[in-house]
Image 1 (tube, rainbow, N blue to C red):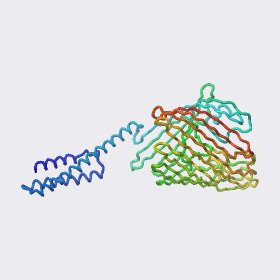
Image 2: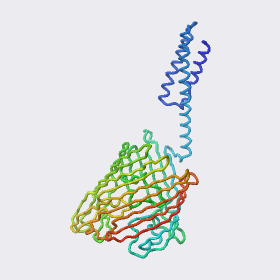
Image 3: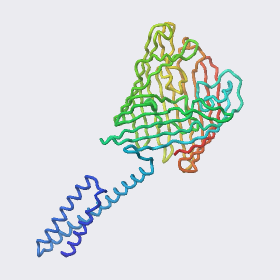
Image 4: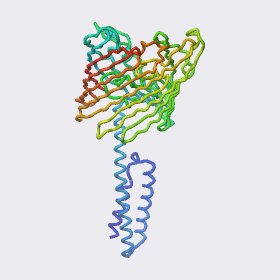
Length: 458
């Protein structure tokens, strides 16, 4: 009995001696305690020539406990070592390192083949208004167009991420991203070349972000899957701009680039560039297995100087709230939504459908109240086939005496698509969209579009 107990204890000692590289601090402490216990038991065996039945049973039970704990800890250490190995392998495959900085390249290649028609006038050949939906540019009052077809790879984008080890436990990260949308370049006759443009460029250190990225007022995670560049544009908060953002848990607050857009009495747009205070945005995010929601609020100081209109200086308050999110439905489906309302939000909604404010004869600013929103449902037909159906709406309360009746009063759109993923990160999608815009004078125009897109993300 004594020999078998000693053999078990020695085996336990061997199990305790797991590789040091697979340990963490808490596991090390537990192993030290077990080693001490094993040593005490062996010493007790050596000091006793005879043992009664109760002593033998006590030592046997203790030995069994030690064996069980050490076996469990060995399994834990093996799992930890495997995880460490997997992370190291992933790091080797994902990007490359130069000194203490790791670089990662990503993006996607996308081709859009689309055909569209409008009820109230022809959209110019080569204009960005034919690349994706811009609600404020839907023609009104002209002759209906035919079906115009365009092919484009302009949405293709590339980004570079970096993460630098500063030696203090907090990495310094950066993100730079470009694409080729809304930029000039070659025509459609020969080269189809387009100049790159900066989409995002920011750095993150701890809880702080500095640079250009999506506005804190916008919830990118709520956007539905669409072949169009945005999809539910009339009802969507959409803005990228420079900012300073602080994040603490679920809460974010940011000071973002200000810019006041003004509607003149003739319905034109003026960008005075007289802003003195940043736009202040606060946002709270909450998520779980059920999905996620975000509530964002914004306060703006809309401003114009007398050197723009020859009138008195004036500042007006702009403000707004936006509730958005994604709710999981069943195992894979989801419902996405956004609802936004406020005064002086013009440039944040639907690609600036209306302006932030109008100006009266005395030079005073009159912020324009707007409300908007969208809802989208995505359903998975199978592991590689899915569809999204979505609709959005926008409405402005224009001060018509100051803006004229030729500005947009309402806009809405709806689309449905079918997306097939024959391979990982490779999508082929077909989408039909209908969009409409109404002026304050009651006239309207619509746009219909059929779009086929292929995208490979790398």
